[in-house]
Image 1 (cartoon, rainbow, N blue to C red):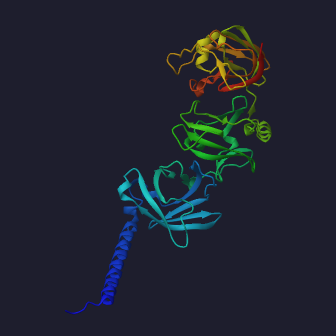
Image 2: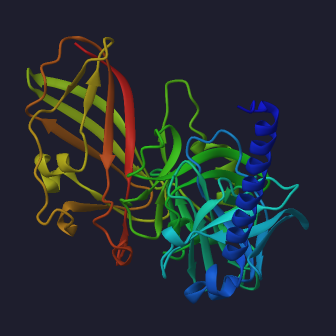
Image 3: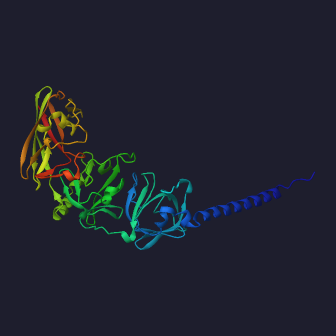
Length: 427
């Protein structure tokens, strides 16, 4: 029997394997070529057929949990056949092709992948697999993961530059709120009242934002929807959805820790807003005293002041009664040195319907006036003698009020809330 030559078999197998690999690579290349062949039919087709254009980047969205700054650029350009180019500071920083994923695309929603040409790497839109939403002159290229950056564009010939003068907010280098968008800022409730109800910032659901005065970064904040689990509230933040205010109002909230500076009070912001007629004091409120009348009856005395140029309507606990007033606020809380909190236990009543309001609940405080307010809690926890940290949120109306109702004939309805604190001694 003839002896088999092992070396010959190995060589033969190597040739077969190499030949098979070449066939496979050629097949893959044909498949890839097929993906980008006739792009008007296969990539940007139907309602996406006019995507071939130059698109100005106007906002970078999401990117929660990211530590590094978003990869910023000026515009992206799509040309046939299925070619993209990303430009920053007039320099082409990435070029490549677009490959459509037919399995995940529909007539209304395009799924495609950015494939950079060598020597470029997928730096600016990474990962490259994205969904496209085209609406007339706006384009959104997004990821379904809110930990990834998404990008919002406008056709370059429709782009109106925004001013970086004064107070403004950016995502990356793109201005999403400029000073001229603002009617005024209510410093007491940290509310930005907008001239129009739908500027760019109101259309974004999530973003990492920087607050500037001119070219100086003042503080970062996060715009987030309540539905996200990728962001743990800390520092300055704006809840995009659901909004608790009319569509022309933005509330900048702050969740901080003891000893951390709340940058919303930064003097550079207040100075530039005052200089440009965008600043209003709103209302101020102080805790004057907390008195224990009996074991479960506690009296809270407040002073409400109006140092603004507007006359304001405010929620009056005398007119609402205690239980309805408690619907709008968590009420007085007293915290001892062991972090145990004492509060009212009597519950609240909800307006009917739940999102309604009544002018009969409100009282008017005119500019320059002060008024004393007393609230008596009749089902308060029994409070031992000692030192306490008192806190109270004075409430205003929020989602109940429409934009058209804010300005009344003889004053404005004050929206928002004020957090009051004071260290007290209970004898």
